[in-house]
Length: 162
Image 1 (cartoon, helix red, strand yellow):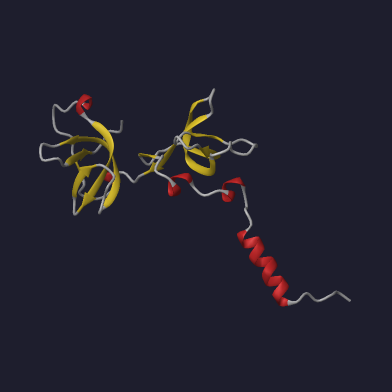
Image 2 (cartoon, rainbow, N blue to C red):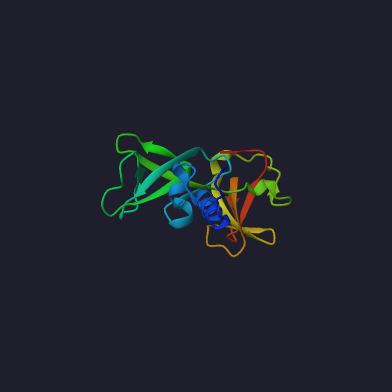
């Protein structure tokens, strides 16, 4: 006759399985949720999906199978890329939604416009008016092709991606 397991034990097992790490990335907090070292980028950010170490100087390096060095903290990076393969240094990204995906925020590119004067940047938009930067009481978005206006606002253009 099979032995009956008390419901309280089954509940503890279920709870343990719920909070147990499912993969390496579940073991560490997301770097971009926990620090200010990540860079904003457009919606096409490369996926890195790796564990990293953040050192006290703010450098991010691949963790590998060994623990982080003394003073460094382990994190997980979903979006990023290896920019120095010798030192295993990583740049981590926070992908933002394209401003042109929001109706009314982007304009048609004017005649005679050249992409030499444009810039790709994160912008803060409030009620359809956008400014460069990330200190925002509105919505952070990515402008692939835009210009800064004399009044400090940003105009994004449709149809080009840098």
